[in-house]
Amino acid sequence: MNIHIIGIAGAMTASLAKELKRLGHQVTGSDQEKIYPPVSDILKNADIKINRNPISKNIDLVIVGSSFNSFENTRQEFETVKRLDLPYISATEYIAKYLGKNNSILVAGAYGKTTITSLLSWILINADFDPSYMIGGDLVNNTDSTRISNSNWSVIEADESIHGLDQKAKFLYYPVKYLLLTSADWEHKDSYKSEVENLLAFQNLIENIPEDGVLVINSRGYSCNNLSKFTKAKVITYNNQDSDYYISNVSIEQNQTLITINTPTSPISVNTELLGQFNFENILAAVAMADYLGIDRQIIQDSISKFKGVKRRIQLIEKVEDIIFFDDFAQSAPRIKSTLDAIKLHYPNNNIKVFFQPHASFLQHKQGLNNLNDAFANATEVVLGKISFSQKIDKNNRVTASDFCSEVGQKLIYLPINEDIVNHYNQTLKPKDILIYMSSGGIEGSEIINSIINNLKTNV
Image (cartoon, rainbow, N blue to C red):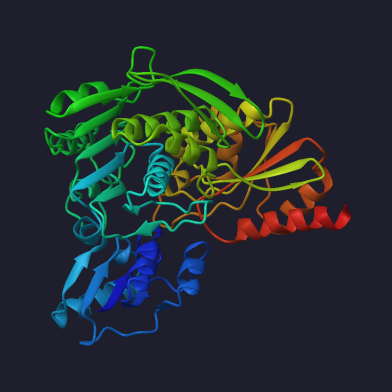
């Protein structure tokens, strides 16, 4: 089949394109002119052509990504698709129809989705379930982010956002038999006008679980306990001393942690390379679901011990002369805090320095900086890269470097010129320093970090 994907450079659509190519389809796509790693690498390695194939009657199916309306060329393409009366479907609906299976596991919530979905998929792969899966990130393990198999099992990272052609929350399109819910915070304020609307979407999802399914909830997750009342399915809890599954002991070393988990039957102990309490809770959640499904505990243990994590989620990228470099996706205050807390937990005697690029759209608004002071509490220094903003934002509400300084405090250094950032770290990094690069996109920051690392290696 000749398939064209409009808005192909999204995390979901790029990995879907690669999988469709593997399945034997001819795949092309369109997006903005400049795309960056890892998406650009995924498409290039799969030999998928971008912005080179005009819409024509030769196309059998058009898949429309959530970002199609963001760019003039993709908006025009979609109009051509409708004018030529070509069959089209949203990426969300395509995944629901062709990837979601009868034994469908959804992972939903404001945090932990990517890691938990990755880990559950990894466990099911090792247990020979041969699942279909869709993960909103790249695994450090050499495993694709999207796979469509012939088995009756699937694992899907289930997002509540509403974008593109979607008329309701993405997770309401997906089939669900088993649901793992970490929280129901009102995260997507661009999709829901109020917290009530947000909670209603989660309620509708929970009501979709069949009686022979299961709902696994985080006992500490926002509104999880209240929402669990809306299901007729079995409810399993985790993360409190009175939950069905909880962590009873943690033995931490820098590169390896032993976690003991109490279960309804007998304890299970797992080793992991993942860092931080929030990742321990992600592992706990995955264990609760896998154990309920009856997967052999040895397989669960082996899978967790070999799981390397998700790229750009506290990813250790280099160590030079006792200086450690991490890469992380965090932008919001809660996620920044979780990441830095995790590093401090494993490296209590190191100095933590942050190179922060404020790419997230909410950081373009003054109110988006709330709680950053507390978020960066474990950092001894924060270097702020160039601030970009949309001209559509009123200048009275548009964030400035001074706003960041006021919120974060004296530890913040604003360096808008890339060369100055490289020079700063070349002159100031010393043994037992940890430098963590925080950004949600773009290639400039990665090039800066690579320059710093290469300079260090040259001077060794």
